[in-house]
Length: 137
Figure 1: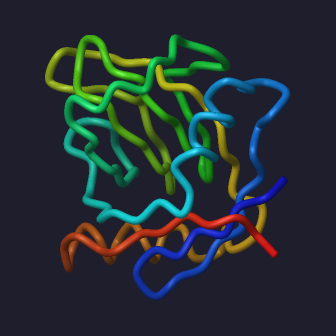
Figure 2: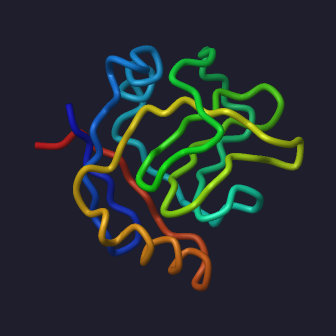
């Protein structure tokens, strides 16, 4: 199953990693349509993130990584740092002020990769951008 992501003026299609992260995918599907703002990461490198504060996902770790690839989207279920979604557009090492983190890799961008860097630079230089996730048609 795929999701459509609209971030700033850009559109992406992302594949749910249902086999590798079934609980995270199921939880995120419950939240659809999901809208928020995306800001540039502070410690993780070439990535943007959606801070979710104390939101309790009820999730543990599955398909988790500290080193996401370009186009990987992680959900950090909370614990050492606040709950968040990390959207990687280049080189990244997932971290917070508490140190290195591992997040659940639950989405992978499969269309629109050519706009990942442009999104990241827009968020870096122009500030927070709206982001929305919906089920793809």
